[in-house]
Image 1 (cartoon, rainbow, N blue to C red):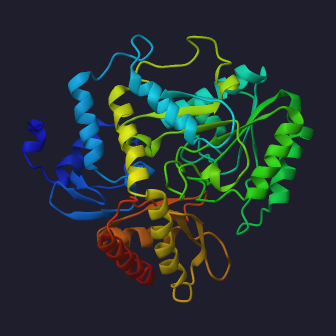
Image 2: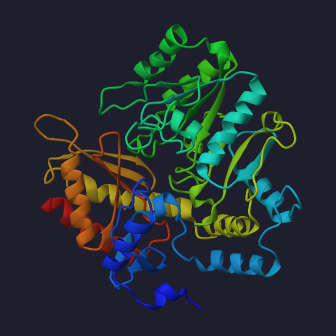
Image 3: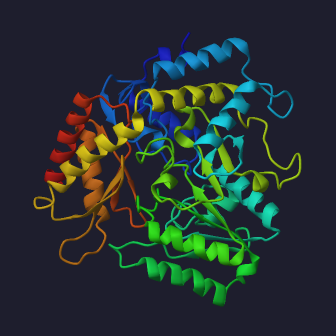
Length: 431
């Protein structure tokens, strides 16, 4: 039975008024329409309008809305039990999912995995594990990074507005170094030199527990980390006994054409964080890493009431099955290539299009003023608005808000994907 409020079939405007009255402005909401149902890459609002969803709940729906195998797994688990608290009464699904993640994480050594609920929780716990394992407290992140909205997550995040403004002070001994960006004139050498400057000016490397980086920055603008940069971090880390943490929360589970984006680099990392698309929309996150590091925290030091919820764990098993059985890593490469070709083909007709970048289906387009080269957030907003008017949902990102990121479900049917590319082309040409 549906909720009584849904039976009333209120208009979007009615819900908008109620939202503004009932919920705080700090929870920013992008759209002014309200979802009624969704399927794969399509969503319909309460007034019956259809949208192609290239947002995927912020990179959560790699397997699309309501994948039947994910639904079936949740339904089956619901008939058994839906909560015990794993720390009180454990269950097999948690253990077998940890085994699958351990086997999938790059690296020929023993690994262990702990599950949590949100991406920010995964980051917090990765830092706890790194500190427990090294006996050190310092952490170095990078400009443009996003690691969550908790206090440590905000401290690590390299973007003030809207994430950090007004919420300090933040946890001590968190530092930021430059992240490479060829478009913005930051070379790999300059980025690595920035780390060395931190060692000279701010923190002794013997006090640094970990580097944390995104293999492809998310909020920062879908900037891929060059392999030379990651290899350089690894060399610095090894020279000083520092751990390397890859934040795979947005990059994981086939989005870049590999199960984990770290697999593109061939550079070993010590810990990875993951969340988002793992459980197809149910809240589940985790940390996987070298077994001896994961065992550094004492019993009771890790966990959470809902951590590794059995419904989410069941969904995650189904998601991993779908990724393998439907070839979604290959599909990510195919769809990404089609999108890239569409965007690159518009370069001469859209002078604001400064760069198309990314890996697999984690692609973005950055827009700059063609005369000055300055970031053009207004053009970006126009493209986003025109696409939405035509029924295509897009998300922006980047330190200057001048990047559109593309997060289509990897299960998007060809006909729907072609339709989306046509809508995107029209929006770009008319913006």
